[in-house]
Image (cartoon, rainbow, N blue to C red; front, side, top):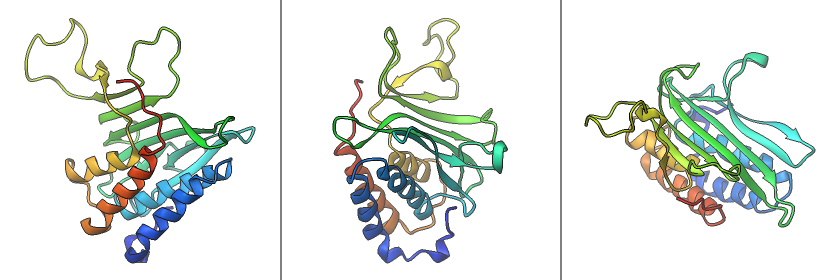
Length: 215
């Protein structure tokens, strides 16, 4: 569960982020738990509702797992992070241990901002897939936007805007949180002097080792 902001010692946030990132560099399956804790902490500092949850699930043979949001109980739960504005972020990140380096890698990530639990009323979605199937033409990392273009006759006939795969750089949890605060007005728990440098430090650490997809 994401603790409420009243229980956070803001002065320790940078230290906590560094410790969790150091845990990620240890490698092996132990890094899965550090990653789950890091994601949970980022939402705790920023836009996670007090009842939001981040879970580590589906460990397969000790080498693969999924870090995802958790909303609801038991078998009826869905991979959503409830936000401070009572909207949701669908968050699914597939991770595995690379056999050659013993470090954790990301196989897929899916971040979708939506108003409802079912996802019928969604706004945007980032998708990333490390290994594309043969013949796949979609960009490995891309953005979907739900809306209608203000200009006419700009898309292929019969193709709606939300089906367009806008190529982008590697989407990160930190950049998605920053976008939701800056442009969508989702209220963070911590003051800007805390959450902005925390997101930057965490993101810089990730991008320093992250796979860079073709754009």
